[in-house]
Image (cartoon, rainbow, N blue to C red; front, side, top):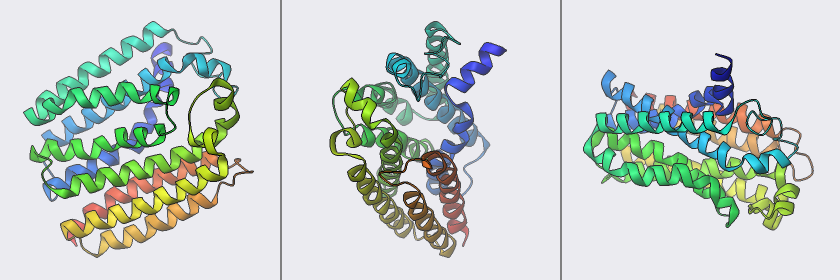
Length: 283
């Protein structure tokens, strides 16, 4: 049980609750409401498994960098609290659950799965060669919205899932740009690529604000494409306010409130997007 708890802490399993609204957003909008318990259950399994697989691969890929970074040296894997074999086993189990969930959903989702797994496993390595890694991470997380839409409809022909995918891509990239400012000096020393390392923290924070503006615009376009009613638009105003607040918390020369911006505010935003969209369907 101790090892199991360490594994859950290693992949920050509790943050799956923060990520689940992405998938549920695509699910309820595709269904025009509640899709049924079967779809809900398998989408939940797929989302939790995908995130666990991606996080396990990330921790394995970065364990030597994490060991040299004072900010991350205390993590379970570099500190020796758990070994790589246990993390590999967790990744294999998570991948098996993801395949099972995709098979239970529909053939279209199963056909999309290899591409999804490529991004889930590969995004962790993009910092080795491109500062576009923030957007690769956002694109990978955005797959949850499109995947849930495909799970319900068996198609991605409608423009809405693509707009939602864009919104999540820009949102995740924006706050990853903020979070990456903590490791600017380390990334430069290790030859890792990020916007803060390449262009400085001030530039990264400007790009974060641009991305979060794009998030609001993409969500507005998605709401308009579905004809969502006033609760969605009221929620979108609140989301825009929270994004403004998130960006106001961090300065290029003062990163002391990064965790507040990263975890607390984004947790509120993810839940609010889902609730506002569902309420907007009902009016």
